[in-house]
Image 1 (cartoon, rainbow, N blue to C red):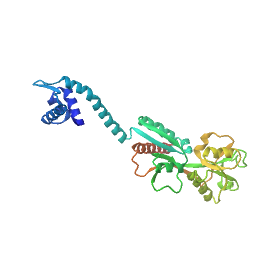
Image 2 (image 1 turned 30 degrees about the vertical axis):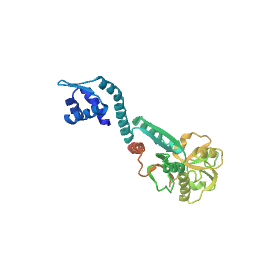
Image 3 (image 1 turned 60 degrees about the vertical axis):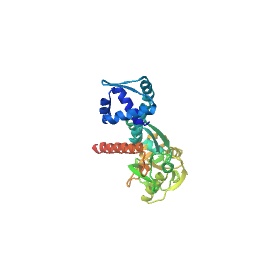
Image 4 (image 1 turned 180 degrees about the vertical axis):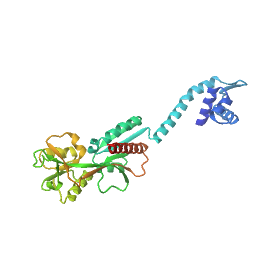
Length: 304
């Protein structure tokens, strides 16, 4: 017995006519009658009373109909689910992000919109530093991630650049230069820089060291800090200075002063990373949604 036999049987039972059932199924009537006859032979009893007026279910046919209707419903549900998964409307999205990327309004807005557009997708969020996120993508533990891209990106990953975010100098409020609104970066060349080491936050580390070099000095490395929040807290504790993405101001940590840096203004990138040739449709949908949000954001800023 094949699934199509069940479907044919249900349609004939609903239409009470081989002719009407054949029309609805898009096949001619003789093969349909033959398929139902084969089904009856296989079961070993008649399922329909046939007459010139059409067909009626026999008691055996009624019992069979009650038993197979849930099967057909489950097949329909399974087909629908498979189509939804293929279109990225169902299933799950494993999304990684660095702590600082969440401070950027683009990410929370993208997640909110994605959930509105794809309510059946289970979102599994994971926060980690960029290098860990990229490893987890390569190990197929994540589908997509927002990272601060380092200079060297693993060969198996694709990067989609989202934005360059300006960096600010962050100084303890008691620092001699804290009263200024902007500074030359080389004014900080005698200060200790609090950084996340390259093994933890390669993208940010590269951006800060490259910025200092472009202003003619090597930063004096002071304390290590595992993430942006700890960098700013150590600056507040008067242990040194640092450079942080503009969005860090939203953390609202007291005891520090954020200053603009005079050109060349250092920037740090934010990018979407995913495996090359990814088959995750939810990841592809998320990437396209965040890209269209970014274009909308750029367009609005352009209008201003």
